[in-house]
Image (cartoon, rainbow, N blue to C red; front, side, top):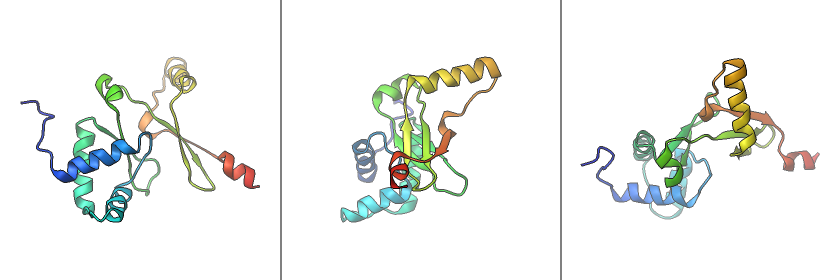
Length: 141
């Protein structure tokens, strides 16, 4: 039996289905609990954390700690990314509204390569956040 094969509870299956339904989004354990509570199927916060931690260990979910003191965010990794073991996700965060923008683009990857080659500096892609003001907040001014 494969080490990654585990007994899958109904709650685990529901959690996986929820994460798959919000591709490219980061959610907190609290967001997950809120979602299921609104569906009339509450799941305890401890259960959610336990299942998310297992999914992170299995490589099915990425965990991001974007700021000290803020809750960790989780993102489901689709099978295409999961199978090759390479997932990079960089972020822009609006300093006004807190909006989080995911960056999946070649130019960022080139910058990361440049920093490694020319400056001997390796970026932790799971903790990379660029701060500024989003388009919506700039338009509000």
